Length: 386
Image (cartoon, helix red, strand yellow):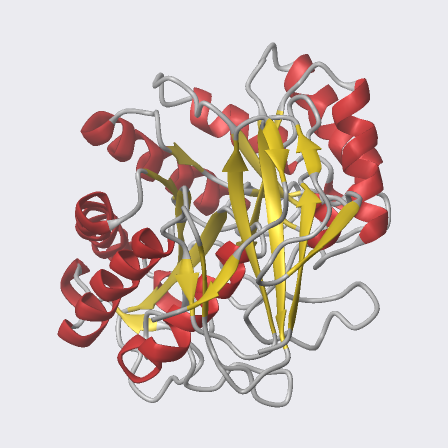
């Protein structure tokens, strides 16, 4: 057995946001998702899903954001959408959701956000063609209630919900008023039933339509219910810092102090990471989260395959190399979180950390994130899995 292990000090910045990823497909073929949805086809791909979850958690990712795309009848659709006739999932999708939630929890993720993305006649955004059927409102609402119950029972400790992905109303689309009405009604229903502690509606941040977030605040305020405890934004522009500052200014102008979450942006992007660090250092408004979408800035039409990494957003800390399995030079560490990187160059697949329950079988490279007390460490001991 030949291997190399490294202690890598995790980035530690005051008020640093949790780092997450949008994880919706376990299989991508030719840059596109085909029959690889973690909810729609999780029964087929559960082994791969578990392996990908373990790798992403080991890489330092702590939050997942997963879609429930729904339409009344999703027959013949293979890209990940599920049927929602009657306001419930099909038996297969129902079981897939439970299995996925259990696997997310077992993998150690701290947070999971479920995102609702109604499609076709269930879609009140109505862009580019308006197929919205107002009779589908009750179906969407019943689906939210049904899914929430499952998520709260089987999911990780912290679960939140985006009631309609990018549902902040545009200032120029012909369908704006129907979306305003939908947002207000679905949000009021949710808060009346469950409160406002775990719910939001996400907004695109686009310099060409900068009023979306303000329109959303106005729509939600019209309900008379308490507003969300955070506001969620998506940015794919080359000016992320300005986007974050504009969001801050909009909420300030509305008299709001809620934190914000950047829930979609370019994958593992160094320029974005720099903009985020600058915003965190200069703004008094907390940034709770940075969750990447699996597309790169230079090729946004090509979806990336899981498992995902987020090195740019997690930071690039210094490394200390020690040998495996007999240790290396003595190293004094302060208490904190560290990433252990193991590169397996042998034919034996599988290691475990002595003193930690973490264990995963792999060939190649794996990363463990561990919390260690202050002390002197003569070397890291990594043992073959039994």
